[in-house]
Image (cartoon, rainbow, N blue to C red):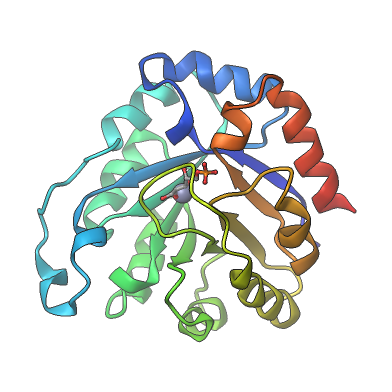
Length: 234
Ligand code: DX5
Ligand code: ZN
């Protein structure tokens, strides 16, 4: 069966104090730490013709060096979400840095996801696939049903790029469909999750909950984390 995982998004933390922010979240009951690795290209470049531009602004937010630094301060599961144009380039650096989960975007990996999943696993990380709000859910079925499958699907509930955006409830159809098809799959939701939206996500069937601004912006993050966890367990 699926177990709840609450994953504070470190994108909303104080980057200058990343280790203490991570410890603070773990002490507040966080199960995973969600790490957003972004390069600019995925947001600007939609046309597939440009998807081959490999080194278009790599490491714009954080990258392997920061994961490596954080890893020295914690044994926590680092749930890495790669919003990059060519995730294959990041597998080895992220594995060496100590990433635990490696979630790539289906939009960037149409032609090489099989190879990607295999390499992620052979580097000792857990593979996941993410999809943007505009991407139909059917695009991830082959990856979940493959002989060598992804182990998590991340359903974006905002357009990737920034914390603090508004949750898109219409994405819950995707979560419901996935949960019905795959009863024991880890289904993660990311974007705009907090006390006012968690019930929609939990009742649709999500079990891994990313929450940035709602947790870091709360006077008592522990209360928010336990509220999120209780909703999933219900
Ligand atoms: C958005 C990132 C999210 C973001 C979530 O591109 O993938 O992980 O940090 O932040 P909130 O919870 O504030 O929407
Ligand atoms: Zn994310």
